[in-house]
Length: 198
Image 1: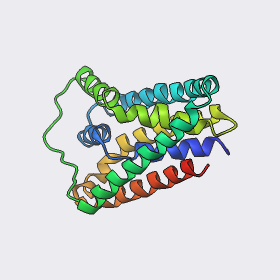
Image 2 (image 1 turned 180 degrees about the vertical axis):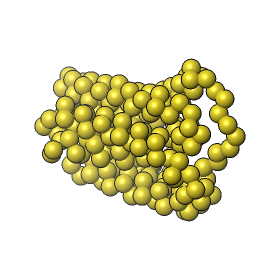
Image 3 (image 1 turned 90 degrees about the horizontal axis):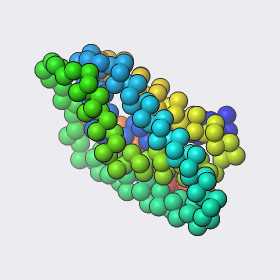
Image 4 (image 1 turned 30 degrees about the vertical axis):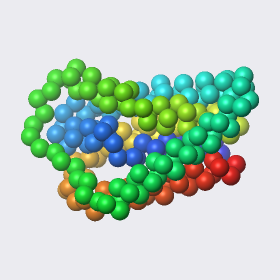
C-alpha cells in the first residue's frame, strides 16, 4: 500500500484536470453514446503510457544518473505552471460543460477522435511518461506504484463515463468548474513541493 496508494492518487489527481479528453468523455456519457468503448479506450491508452513511464524511466535513470533530478525538477516546474493555470481558471471562472444535440458519430469515428485528443496532447506525455515515471522511481515497489496509477485511470474514466449524466446539471454551472479547478491547482502545487523537497 505504501507504493500502490501514492500511484493511485497521483494518477487520479492528474487525470482530474479539465481538458479536451475529459470533456469529450463527459459529452459522450451525457449523450449515452459508445460510453463503454470510450472509457475502455481512455483507460488502455493511459495504461500503455504509464507502463512505459514506470518501466522505461527506471532503466533510463540508472543508465544516466543526472536524468532523474533533471526530470524531477522539470516535473516540479511543470506542476507549478499547471497549478497556476488551473488557479487562474478558477479565479476567472466562466467555464461550463456545453452539451447539445444528439451524437450521430460511428464508434470508429468516436474512437479515432478520442485517440487524437489523447495522443496528440503533449501534456499526456508529461503527465504519464515523465511525471508518473519520475515519481515512481522514488518508491521501493515501482510495479505496485504503476498498478495503482493504471487502476486510478480505469476507475476515473468508468466513473466519469457512467456517472456523468448525474453531473450534467452541476457542470452547467460555472461555479462547479471553479471549485474543481481550485482543487486541482492545490493538488498540483502540493505534488510540486514534494518533488522539490525530496
